[in-house]
Amino acid sequence: MRQLISSIMAAIKISSKVDAAVWEELRMLAKESNQNVSGLLTEAISDYLRRRRVRPVVLDHLADSMDENDELGKLLAK
Image 1 (cartoon, rainbow, N blue to C red):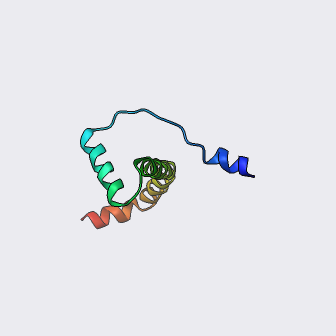
Image 2: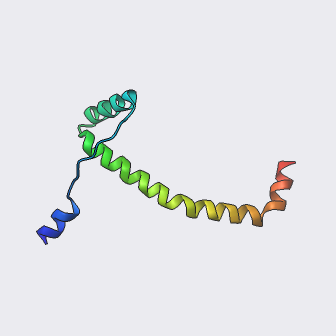
Image 3: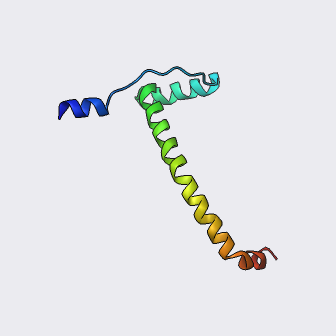
């Protein structure tokens, strides 16, 4: 069991370029919230992935709804 948890929680090192002002804001947020930058980045990436995976489904439903209610939309626009 410990091995399973260890493999799930394994961290990797990454290298990327980030706008200097954004990086400083992230560092300040980490300090203000008593967290580390790594934790904030992990949380941000996780949130981003969750949003990106949901968005196409939501947009499909929105498009379907707009198609179904096209006439109502035209009336409301007047």
